[in-house]
Image (cartoon, rainbow, N blue to C red):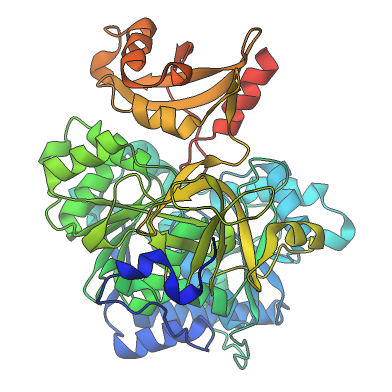
Length: 567
């Protein structure tokens, strides 16, 4: 089966309001901030616990920090690491690094010493900007680096540098006492580390901005759930291709987003650091997920667009106050990272009239490569290929394209593709495959396409349970378990079985009201009624919570490795 780009199935149902592809600006990402600041100087760009940062102020601070970076020796193409939770300083620093013609290296703020030292050493970063509570981890990581890998400069900010005083905050914007103490903490800094205010206070002007569209803009590291993380090389152009895609979400300059998905992660970064500035929207920033605070902020600031992950929706439903939140301003809820359980999506639609729009993408694809159009969404579906994207389902061994309905590996091609893995030509070569004269990315995800060109995820290529020859896809079992009225969350892994080789094991978090009233056997019996016998969990264990990555994904690999160790 082979069709040309102009004959792809999803074109028959493509929204009439949208072009099939977008013309990507041939400028650097910095230029987007210049334009927004000129057009809307006084408009709120970001709001952090009540304090507003205008577009003109964002530009002014970014210029001052860019001047400081260049004065500190940062030159074109140099890597600068960002080690922060969501906060206005992240955006200021991101654009300052770009303005200095350098390369941004976002670092997961949950990373510990070993993880940080690997990333700094691999990226060959010489300057790092971090939060005060992470400075001690930076110091410890530096001690593990060789002389040629040492950081030249470390700049430290407190989250409270961008916050109002407690007396200036509205009750709806107040974090918990524990979180407020963390945000305002002033731990002692290692000798030689510079404070944020000292750098900006120098008001240094940067030199000429010379970065071009095809220059390297960012090294975004993969999650590293299997081995060491790899740096994905993205240019200004590859990132710009998704930064300009706000028309998909029906975003306007008056839209207000809730910036709670992590900015260090590709989804949060593209949505709230890049696209938000291109569209000149306003973003309410949350440094950590808190369902009560999220509900209040949506209500208080009339949030219209919420990019999230399914676990956030599930958690919001778990709040005893969720019916009191004023969510009527929301017009668009989208996300990815994990499939939205159909039962939860239906509950969202029935109770609030909102359709959760699932999307799909990877670090290598600068976030979205697929999405559900708002006017024609399908539940538990990755959506159709995004602007200018060509995706296929192929046999993972022969690379022959498969017919609709057949499960194979998803491969994808488009303007958002990364340029390869940093200093890793072998991994880069393995990531791509030549198909119909183009270099497609092998996603490593199994899925299928329906007759209308919508894609559906079956599972990770290597995440499969083989039970007596029957192939079980954990994501499918998890989706079914979510329909049980007592199940809050579930993760399915393989357990060793002397007879079957492998069998299905489910780790389940119960809803609060079901704790003490629901047994494992009851859920197993229910499963027998709702899924094929070979899919039914033969082992079911109740847990208080499931481990999640910094981007909120359930870390099934951790649970699978733990199971293997205990066997």
